[in-house]
Length: 115
Image (cartoon, rainbow, N blue to C red):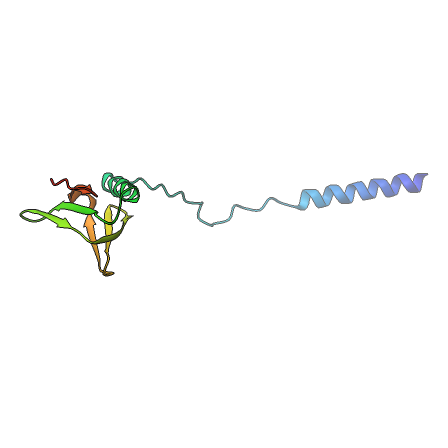
């Protein structure tokens, strides 16, 4: 009985010593996790809205009117319109593309309206 108590006491002391000897690790010097917040600009929201609206229109008669340097310019023969940030990427039926600032768009129509 004394031997059992002695073994339990030694085992308990050994566990206590091991637990006490395990020191907490210092914090790693790695950079803390970063958080990226993307806030869309007004032009980006406008471009996204235009691209979504074009999806609801007929591409057959689609015309995009935008403000040029001196006058209003009409883009015709459009196959697709995609938003990329604050820019509309307009793809023509021939495969050519043009990037157009969403802030310069005056009117997008699939009818006979003009600005």
